[in-house]
View 1 (spheres, rainbow, N blue to C red):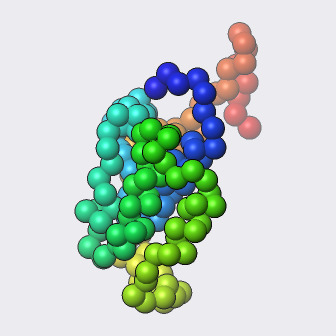
View 2 (view 1 turned 90 degrees about the vertical axis):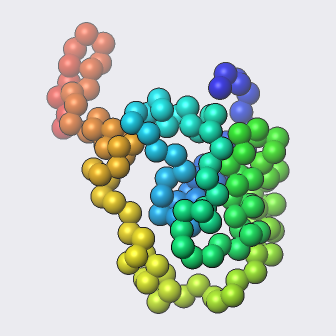
Length: 140
């Protein structure tokens, strides 16, 4: 927190968050407030995805996701090309099919956004009036 300089590796961190959710159907971090979640993203090491699901996750895939989630940008993969190359090397026991995807998602469907504190807080802005300078403009 406080680094003014950012580069493409912030996107690789975000990709790691999406991959984490795709593997676990869970957010990397949750909290009672946006500040708490942001603090976790800056300070807390994430729980490895394999510890949050019952299905096996290839070690190479988990290592890549965890590397994307490194706090130090220098420790993340160097580029999206590197991520693609490493993904191509991940061994899979069975190919991912539509049937397997349907089965997985029927078991791991995420909670509705209103049930998740972070999503609820983000979505709560939709019903507020927009304040522009000293005037208030109603939501349209």
